[in-house]
Image: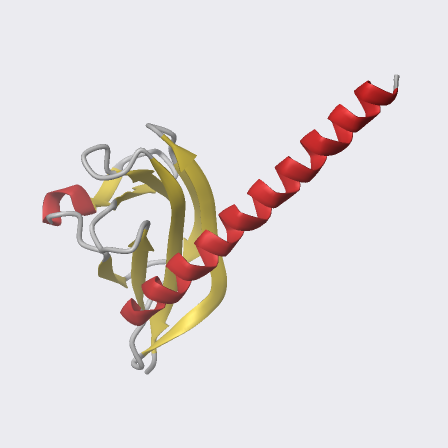
Length: 142
């Protein structure tokens, strides 16, 4: 019985340490990614984050308001180009993918009409097998 409790406690401690280290990694990546939200953009105040393994895909839902220009910055790892991101409308029509632009770490979107969209992010299988995906969103100051 005591061995079982010790094992459970040890497993819990290892899990908490792993969780803490993983989010520390995400904090570092978010700080590096923040350089793409330049001074003429205001952050939406959200950090969209997900820990990904292999071919997992993170999905983020958001509303983009008409008459605004948004910048999406997508990062994983310590170098740009490791995270693939795609933007879909609610009917899953592909509106944009950075795969068509050499995995660009950021892209600006001028929104004419308000749009509910889905952003999918996944690691580039040629670069990373696992890691933290960070998506930052900013809107242009008028």
